[in-house]
Length: 403
Image (cartoon, rainbow, N blue to C red; front, top):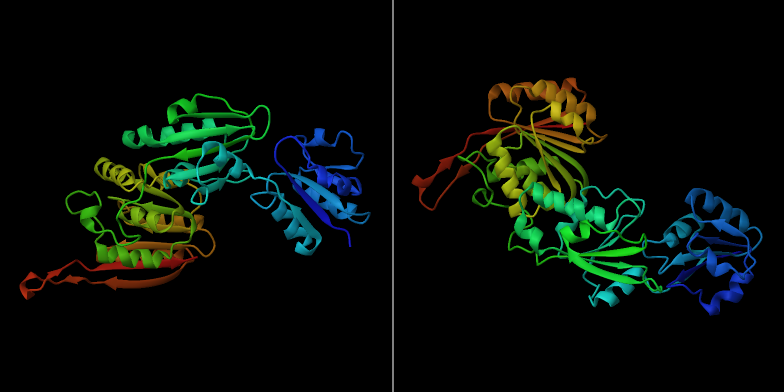
């Protein structure tokens, strides 16, 4: 049975030990970048892009014999190897890796890479890229023609300036390795501002470093006094825990926090599920200031503060997988109707109610919007060691609608 031979290439030379096997192949998949390596080899060429068309061409070429694929570095490290194995099965694929771009970049930077966070932007939607980068001490990025080092640096700069995080902005450093393994290899380092003003070769790796972002805080279970808020206006700890349980947060996706207040639900959600994009809608200046402070305090740049009122501001947001309504400003019917229609299949809409009117109206509105509804009331009594220190909190009704 014919096989697919994937050859990893590091630098500008095709490994001599593979030339004989390459010459015997019926075709070779090659990008424009590696085309010069085949100048003296007479083999049918298949363009590597578009990938779907390439895979079909490989299937046809396998009828005549083995097919070679020229790939950069390690083909199984964010490379074409995964695509070929998924399509043709591991039994028909042989992989001959070379040094990956990550290995080369870390060798040049003299940085151990076994603890690096790796993010590939090749053909991927990065979502809250600034948040995903700033959540880690060291991040290596596979950039592409849209997400170039200067554009990424500008996004980091704009994000930190938006929330006034000048302290972090001064500490983040960036290094870029261009054209690794070639005669045009170049290493550059600088601040976020400096890198944002530069231009780079399309072939590059980008390393973003900052001082440790670790904090001695739990993954879940922040106390009210640890979250910036005003005049006691914050979802109480016990109620927050139940709301987050009802939301059943996915690993990644989109969460709307409508009427964010202090942002306590957003903060806990973003810390529990770093892959979530959290959009916190808040119309009051006081609330927005607390949310900004919490974003900076807990380094949660996957939270996007959306000034203004719902449902108008919801129209500008991506469709949600989860929605929490903590405040409606008297527009509960409009918000539920809009959120329910935008909610992803299988998504959840959760609302909290202090007033009996809201607790009665929300289930009716969710049912009318076609959601399966669940209702529970949480009554919390806090006790000290002494009986006289007992404190009863206002009962909260939590309504959950499933699409």
